[in-house]
Structure formats: structure tokens, C-alpha cells
Length: 112
Image (cartoon, rainbow, N blue to C red):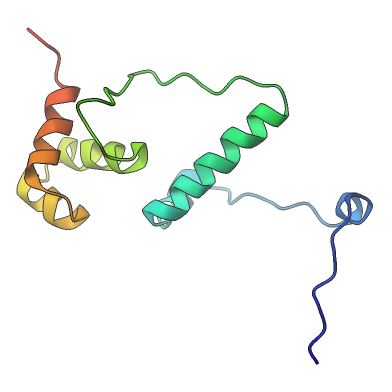
């Protein structure tokens, strides 16, 4: 029989070594896939709530009704477009319809 992993109680956790974030966290998270990024975001939001902190307010609110993409994917689409990638290539890269890419780009443009 295999041995079970040790149970990490609060006392043991306090005496265990701290987890250290990478020195270049923004570069490190670029290697996460969409699901991992969303899990990280959910964990951060839960921890903020546990600590009684308010989640940061986005500088630019996303219109949820207009776009059905996860926030991480939406931001990646916008960043790719701003970096000069054509919408058709963005759609192919992210595996989403071009119509979704157009909705994202339209929601980011200021209204006249």
C-alpha cells in the first residue's frame, strides 16, 4: 500500500516554508493556459474576500451582454489586436469565432 500524503494542519502550515512568487510574475503567468489563469483569479478573489478586502475595480468595465468570453481570454484578444495581430488570426489562435473577436473589438472602441 502507498502512503497517504501528510495532512497539512494550520500549525504545520505556519512552520512550513513560505511559497515565493516568481520575481517576474507578469511574465510567469503568460505560461498559464486559460483554465489555470481563471483558477488563479478565482483563488485570489476568494482570498481577498477571506481577508475582508474588496476586489480591485477594473479600470475599463467589460460589457458582459455584448461579449461572452472569460475576462482572461477577452483581455488576451484585446492585447493581441493592439499588438497588430489581425482579427482572423486572433480567432484562429484562440479557437473562437471571428464574430466574437469583432464583438470584443467593438466593445473596446469608444462610441462616437
